[in-house]
Every structure is written in structure tokens, then in C-alpha cells.
Image 1 (cartoon, rainbow, N blue to C red):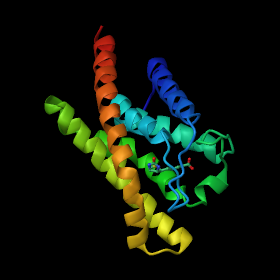
Image 2 (image 1 turned 180 degrees about the vertical axis):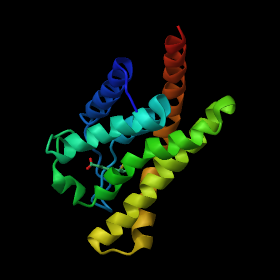
Image 3 (image 1 turned 90 degrees about the vertical axis):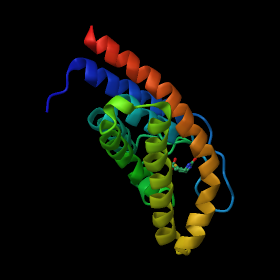
Image 4 (image 1 turned 180 degrees about the horizontal axis):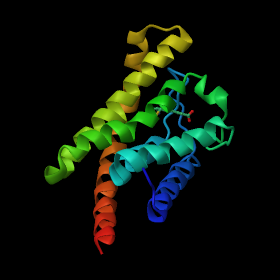
Length: 183
Ligand code: BTN
């Protein structure tokens, strides 16, 4: 598995986009200690634009830097403590979004409409992340899984909008990159 300079550049740019989205302040939702953030838009974008391998590298690089203590999460936080927090499950789930989305999207190569891309992005970038995050939250904060899942429903409208936006931007950029790579 060899990555070319152009692919490394794409990975670095996408990682930078996820970092920049972290500068947009979090919105606390009150019922659980996990805020609304914009960085998961970047994670969904990485999945659509870069696909399985490069997308996972890009999100993985971001999470590695956070793990090593760089304050790249929303609210300028980072470090191992971020993973050992109520938000930890969401962060872990982010790593699998490009993998699961990319693999599934690759089965629809010739039928990648807006709706198909949105649906697959929603399933893994929203439903999977919010469910995984809620299970971790329940375990971490000793609340019931049902309470965590119900509280996590507060994220669904915003996350769905992010999935729509990621699909809209992602398909355009992906098409552009495919054309550039062909020339
Ligand atoms: C962090 O910055 O510590 C991670 C926050 C994780 C927030 C999750 S991501 C999925 C869901 N949608 C949101 O807007 N917030 C939560």
C-alpha cells in the first residue's frame, strides 16, 4: 500500500479541514455532557471525498494528534482524557466512518446519486456514530442505555443537516478530484 504525494496532500488538507471546524464553538445541549459540534461534518466529508483508505488515514491522523495532546477538538481540548470522557465513544466511532461509508459506497459505484450517498453517509456518519457514542456514554456515566439513546436524539436533526451538506459538497469535490486524476 503506497500513498502518492497527491494523496498525502489530500489527506493533509482534509485533516486540516477537520481541525479548522473545531474552531467553531460547541453548543451545549444540557441533558448530556456532550455538545453539538461541527467536526463530525468534516469526518463525513472525509468519507465521501477521500473514501475508505485515504478517509480513514485523514480521520486517523486527526485522532492521533488529539490523542497525543494537541488541542484540536472543539473548544481547543485534546489528550487521552478526551477519549476517557463522555464524548470518547463519538471520537472512537469517527475513525470507522470513512471505512464503513467508503466500503458501502464502493458497492454503488455506478449508481452514486445524491440520495444513495446521503443515505449511506447518514447510516454510518450519523446513526452509527450517535448510537456508538450513546452506548459509550451510558457505560461511562452510568446512565441507562435507553436514556443515553433518547438524549442523543437531540443530535439527529443537526447531524442530518451536516450529512446533507457533506453529501452536497463531498460529491462535487469527489467528482472534481476524479476528473483531475484522469487528466
Ligand atoms: C469532542 O469534541 O470532545 C467530541 C464531541 C463529540 C460530539 C458528538 S459527534 C456526534 C454528535 N453530534 C454532535 O453535534 N455532537 C455529538
